[in-house]
Amino acid sequence: MRRALPWAAVAVLVLAVLLVGWLSPVRPASVRSDGVGPDSGELVADYLARADASLADAAREPDAPHWGLISFEREVDTAAVAALPGQLRIAQVLFRVPIDRVQTPLVPVAVSAHPEALRKAPLVAAGRLRLQSSGPDRAARIAAVSADRLAAGCACIVGVAVRGTAAQLRAAAEDPAVRAVEVLPSDAVAGRFSLIPLLPEHVETVVPGPDDAEP
Image (cartoon, rainbow, N blue to C red; front, side, top):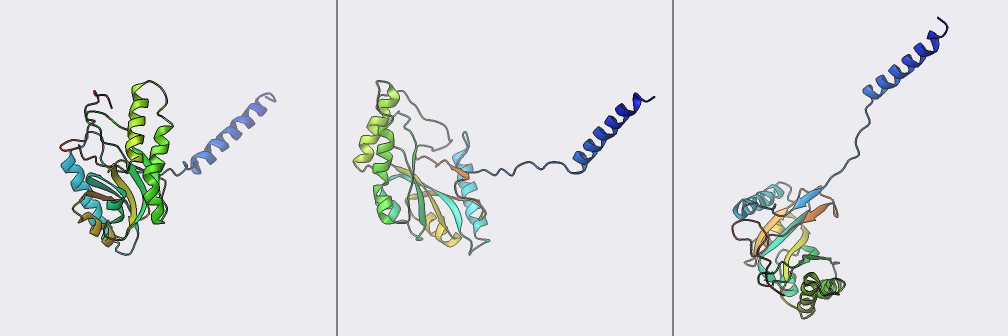
């Protein structure tokens, strides 16, 4: 009988621990990740409708600043970005050099509010690609050609991340060069969302184009 007592005590202790755990479960860490841009395989018409709906939702909080993604009808240069209506804060520029039948890399460059940062962004993107341009493989050649064109000031911007009010974002959406403006909720946190622009070559469905040519 005396040998049974310690085991009974252990059983009671285990039961108590389990009961405390059940009554006070450990809360999972809060992880939030937003994404802005079309989904792979999504119909372009569906994405454009979704982007318009997000802009309408933002209008419900007219005074709150929102993060948004602007995608262009065709590739533009930094001057066109600087000329966007609405006086938006340009926070990140998304570069992608268009080469026929070649999939080129998307190069994001964060920019400060100073106008000079936007002007120099193509050189920053070119410098990053040059780090990938050594070697005889095709990817290195694509990076080298893309870097050269960016350094030469090509019209190679496919999207920009911006911050502004609903009215500012709506003004940008009315620019003829703008294809879509998708807006995140006002509580979205900078650096906690991904950016995937709607590329000019995406006409019906968001799928990769051919990648069978030399750069």
